[in-house]
Structures are given as structure tokens and as C-alpha cells.
Amino acid sequence: MSDKEQQVSRRQFLNYTLMGVGGFLAATVATPMLGFAIDPILKVGGDENMVAVGDISEFGKDYKRVDFKLTIKDGWAEYDRVYSAWVRVLDNGEVQALSPVCTHLGCTVQWSPDEHPNQFYCPCHDGLYDENGINLPNTPPTAPLAVYQYEVREDGKLYLGQAISREELG
Image 1 (cartoon, rainbow, N blue to C red):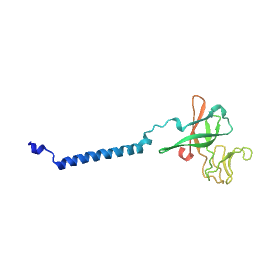
Image 2: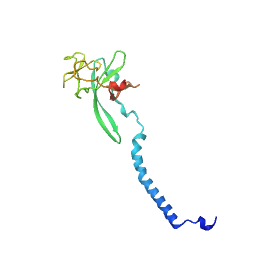
Image 3: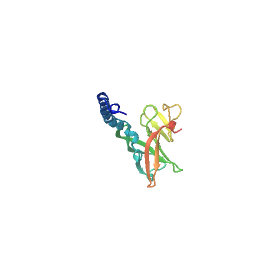
Image 4: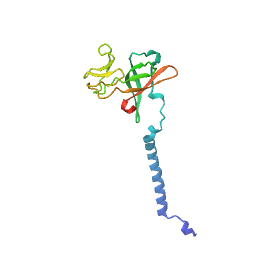
């Protein structure tokens, strides 16, 4: 090859230079935006979605109401939200943790063994659930109460997580 064929013209030099600088600037701008977009995917979830609500020995066959705070991650935002649960331990040792949110209008249901024996009562529209949180026929609730994910760990503590509707459980 001759020297003339190997030389780069001014036009080619400017073209290569502008493409290199433009590519560098585009990468400089795009990298932080890409990191911002995929950051929630790369975060490893831990035990922050389960919260200790007490020692398992504190719960018996009767329902006990507990309040607890969960950290909610919504994309890039994190915030604490207070939840409540009706918790009891069944004869077979299984934990039953029910959400107190009525499935009809979102009112708070109460465990009232005196007024409504072995039933949850929703004062908004006289809704009733049985002792397992199943909505009773001919009352306003449209579905059973949601159940909380739970774990009893080796240290004897009861941990609660998110409430899941029974339809999602299958």
C-alpha cells in the first residue's frame, strides 16, 4: 500500500473524533441513568420484610391484637408503615395471623367474643367473619380476611410479613 492510501483525510479525522467524543458523552450521560433504572433490581432483599412481633409463648388460643411496623420498598422509595394483626396459636401449633382490614370497605374488624361469639365483627355495615376469618354468608364482606406471612424462628420469636389475600394463596 502506498502512503497516500494509508493517510486519513481531514474529513475522516474529524468524523472519527466527533464520533468518539459523542460516544464518550453519551456513555457519560447514559451510565448514571441506567444505574438509576436498574438499581432496585440489583438490591438483595433480606429479612427486612419480616418483623418480630413477640415471643411465641405470648400467644395462646385466643386472638391477641399486635401492631407492628414494616419497611415498604416502592421502587426507589422506602417508608415505614404500621400494620395490625389478630394472632393466635392453634392446637396443632400453627400460627393464625389475620389482617383486621374488612374486605368490604376496608374498615377495621374487631374480635368481639362477647357481642359476637367466635366471630370477627365489622362495625361499618355489620359484616361478620368466622373465627378463621372466613366471611359469613348474607353479610357484606366479599372475601375472607387476608392472612399474614409468618415465621417462628429458633429464638422463639414470631415474625410477621406482608398480608396475602387467600385467593393469592390458592
